[in-house]
Length: 116
Image (cartoon, rainbow, N blue to C red; front, side, top):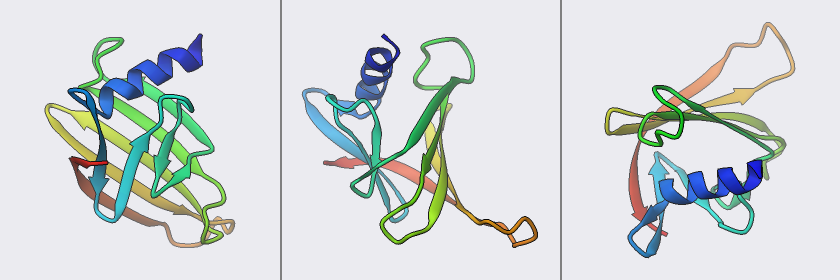
C-alpha cells in the first residue's frame, strides 16, 4: 500500500498532462518510473526515499523528499534532499564521507521541469 501511495504521489510530481516530464536541478536529472515507485537520478535508482509534507498531508506542492544513492556509479555515496515549497523547487546534494572530521561537501541547485 505504501509503495502504491508513493508511486501515485511521485507520478503526480513528475507528470505534465499525459506526457512524462523530468526535473532538472543543475547537472542532476530526476525522473520517476510508475512501475518502480522510486526516483531515478541521472538514470540511477535511489536506494532509499522518504517523503515529508511541509504543510498538510498529501500536499505535493509543499513537500520534501529525502533520498540516498549508495553507492553511485562513480563509487561515491550521495544524500539528496528535493524540496518543493511555494511554487519553487530545489535540490540539495551532499557527498557522504566515512571520516567524521572530513569537510562537508554540499551543493544546492534550483530545479525546473524538462522533457523526459
